[in-house]
Length: 253
Ligand SMILES: [Zn+2]
Image 1 (cartoon, rainbow, N blue to C red):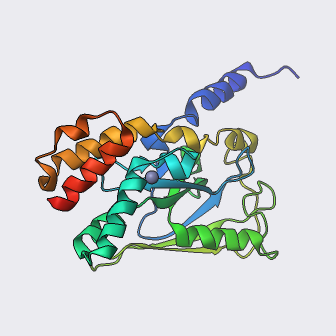
Image 2 (cartoon, protein in one colour):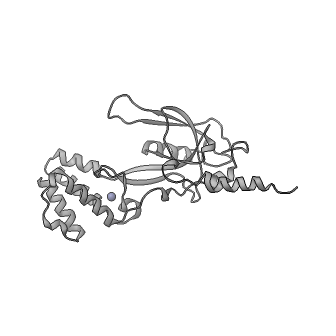
Image 3 (spheres, rainbow, N blue to C red):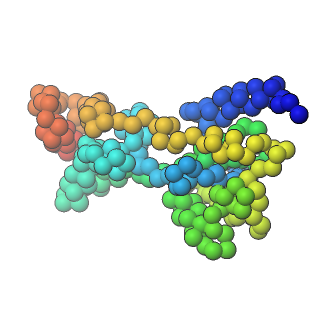
């Protein structure tokens, strides 16, 4: 029987376009209530990725911490640590609070297929430490094992609860289905295509150099009302003295 070229073209199209989108269209957020997801395996054997971000640096979105992610040095970590020590030494709650806001926070990422929306392809789900630990707990529990395995893995029911009280965080509860199941059957999608369409999560974020992070921190500190009179000292190229100067301004402001 001759090969069906139309079908092959369609498969190629799907492989090229259907599952390779990056950026915002790849991200998935749970809705209030229950939804069922399946976490997919990644080529490197670790589908639960941990990243560290600095939030609250001006209007910037979360900035990848060069130190905790890539082993470089990080001006924001250095600044936040100094600020914290000063806050502790001087019993300064405002400094301590600001330091806490600037500390690197971990966030976790996994490729998922959302049940009922399989045609949308593989999405990237971002979650917090509690969910991360509960996922690792299931993987290490012999009753579940590798929940991401395409043949013998397990779907997970995710219950997302958004609290009514302002200031409290949404809760994510995870419960594996009672029975294992295949990632997908032929009626849903080609399973191999799905697995090979899992994006490299690393490529979804903008990696910043130490110098870039320094510049963003400087911008943030110089625009801060507390440090409007920055000295010419901050113009020095020396990273250390820039941080020190900005820090002094911040503390003296
Ligand atoms: Zn950092």
